[in-house]
Amino acid sequence: MDVSAVHPFLFKTIMSDIVAGNNLSHSTQLQTLRREFSEELQFILSYWFTHMQDEVHGGFYGQRLWDETLVADAPKSSVLNARILWTFSAASRFTGSTAYQQTAKRAFDYFITHFVDEAHGGVYWSVQYNGEPLDTKKQVYAQSFAIYAMSEYFLLTEDETAKQLAIDLFQLIEQYSRDRDEGGYIEAFTREWQTIDDLRLSEKDANEKKTMNTHLHVLEAYTNLYRMHPSAEVKEAIIHLLDMFDRHIIDANHHLILFFDEHWNRKGMQISYGHDIEAAWLLCEAAEVIEEDIWIKRMNNVSLKIIEAAMEGLDADHGLWHEYDPSTGHTIKEKHWWPQAEAMVGFAHAWQLTGTDIYLQHLQNSWQFIRNHLRDEQHGEWIWGITADGSVITNEDKAGFWKCPYHNGRACLELMQRLS
Image 1 (cartoon, rainbow, N blue to C red):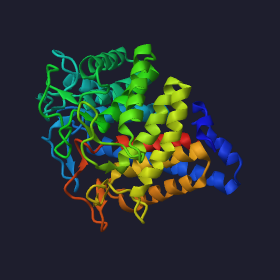
Image 2: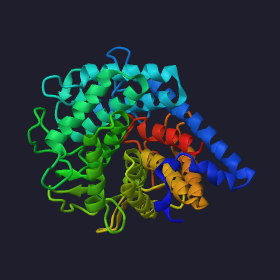
Image 3: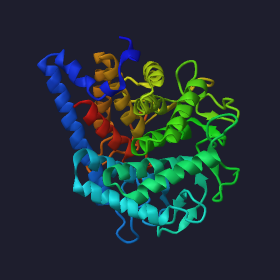
Image 4: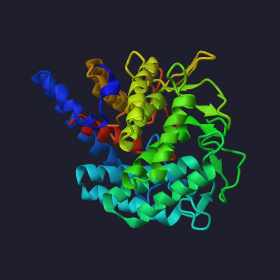
């Protein structure tokens, strides 16, 4: 099948055509999966109702440890809070739940009050447990998630404050971060949008001026912004990002290069299997939303190659390893929650493009792995992950700076739509 011939607006309906050509048991199988993902969405989000709402200082707690220990005075990150806002807004839009909308409003009100820098524009990286500014740097990754969340909240509520903030953040990124000479976006700035020495998202990242991770989430944010605000300026920026992925970020083996200097020279050989398979469907989504046929065809074709490359990281138990460095042969043999969630969406996406049932089987295998190893039946939500021998990872959060309902909640929403 020539996937370049698949029209973008068939992405959400092609499932029904595939089902029509298969037997009743196949259709029943899809209905069962869809019901399971609907139930899983409720299972995940209920955790954030019952375990993470901060009734003393507002918003949501900044951290729970792997064993459910609450760290009530932990800092609160803009990324976590933006992801909560996006997730509950998207869930409310899809399900019509007023409870989800109320939680989205809680997240929106807290974010607007505590994370927005009224003096210099943009959003802080983090605040203290009581809402006072803590780390005031302007990480472009965080600005992107704020755009993503505010756009979704506007699509739910038509709140003009959310819309204007999303547009303002877009303009700040374009003004300060976009590299007009070399292309792409610089990672981070001081509170006043000046150059900064430490550009890293975390201690685990290389201190480089351009990263795949930030570019992927700027693209994701701009795609949602375009849904809300389909301007020529936003469309041009999306095309620019697709071009950067095509020319610089996707390597000859169809893995994503993680780190670059400002001139797009590769820094390091690490492969992130989760980012590979997440990018595969997000690139196609961006091309679809802006309705540019040349980019739709290009991204449809390359996405399948990226998914096949990412599948090099599948273990025998169908879990996806974290990272691999081909220069040393070292694999980080951990299976974190978020690559498994993105794998399910990637496999559903590949099935939609090709109609090849092996991808549906991979989706089911990933889902079974999650249920067997990551789903916390006692407390709710998913754990961070497991090690190679199946042990629970205990040095990471159950909820925190990076552990949130966005990857797995979004996977449920995507799969409910794609399996309709």
